[in-house]
Image 1 (cartoon, each protein chain N blue to C red):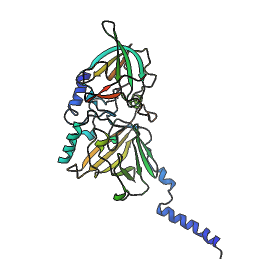
Image 2: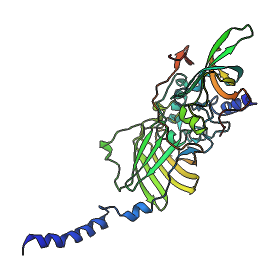
Image 3: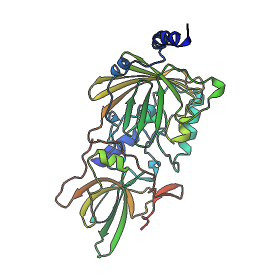
Image 4: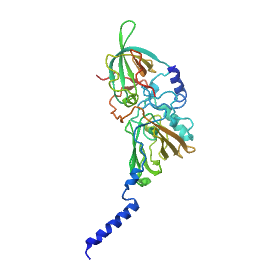
Length: 247
Length: 126
């Protein structure tokens, strides 16, 4: 018997085995993913023309209800002392998930991308992988995220997030040991709800549970990304002022 | 009324803990307890990131002209409110409500409301 027929017989068996192992993605899997297309803004956080949200804006990551421990409170006080002349190039994680900056959820079988107008990008891998080994990962502004689908709910596990307050001057000053779990689900065509649970033995005395809501952006028909090419704020006597335009 | 709304917002958050939020820079530069109303002519509209700006020429009672640099949100936020780069043009007459700088320095501030000469408010509030 020559080798050719033997290989031919092996191919269907190998393909079946690969499908069973998940090595070949099934088309039906993609079809079953929820449609979260469009653009989304944190409930009640859409900015007015000033760049600030309206009165009553509920920034849930900036409340006094956070279960800070002594270290967390000390970090919070220190952050408050140095923020007058601070700038940020985006929001970073986790604040980008509770902000007025429009978000996009790009859902694919292998990963979900979460993107905002400041080019904050999260890659949430849903292909079955785990986080890299602890010794092979390092803290970043957006952390390392893996996810899984439980029906129509995307469950995201995020670790290795650099102290968010280092990136954005009013972000919660959590430690790099913080562990974030989000359960995100579309509850109506114009509403996505998320429950984020943060555990951080360094700065929190108990798990911090945040109920976040994203509403469909009313007028946004495209993601506006633009360069930071017109920063006219400069420090003068400890506070920013606005300098004249370059002509 | 608007001033009271701003005061309430910040008294309930930023003045108690470091809770203010403004992409790019801290809002501590503005004195949210005060507001000014200015009427003038647009010299320049900058549709930019991290902020958009309107340069407004305001004529004083003595006839002297003063230019104000009025900061707004980033163009992405304005887009979501229905603004476009063509919404404001040089030569347009505007009446604006401005939160002044905390330093007391005149000629710059945060734009919180803009009305056209016929009284139409530009940009819908969320």
